[in-house]
Length: 204
Image 1: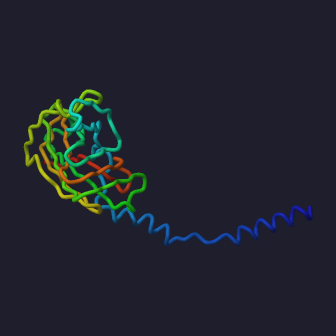
Image 2: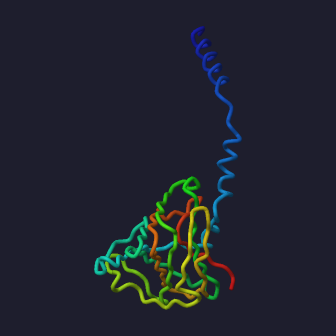
Image 3: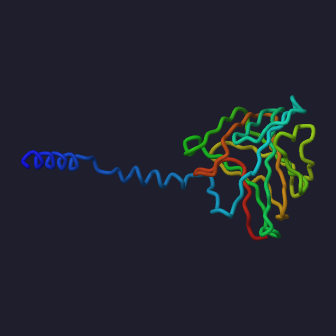
């Protein structure tokens, strides 16, 4: 019994000796989300690409599979992003945004940027999108480019960019992203801070 009491006393001393929680550090972790260039609305207020298909001008007949790590390279690799507008969004505004946090703001993602950061976006005709293992540079989706497309956006980490908006029409639509002066690779991820290309909805 005496031995048991000694063990209990020893454990209690160990508990008392534990360092206090660093509440300031916890606050910093929570508050860090406020520094994100922009936070996405709660689901279903936004949509992520359902397919991201690379195409290459230097290998125009190669069909690449879907990827979670889009890779844009100057005058070569582009990526086609498929979005599916649901019926209940008909008549609302669809807005495409590229969210581009700083590297130290990312919790589960990364990016690599080389170059000046100029990227070009074009919008397909409704019903046109990429098909994994089928779409190539030579048979990429037909471009319609209404509503201010195509457009060029100069992008640097630590910012959020509105690429363009259009009246939501239910069905498949795609954006193609390319560059003439930069290489950008990232892991598409909507965890705070979100990074990549997304579509959000708002009343018309």
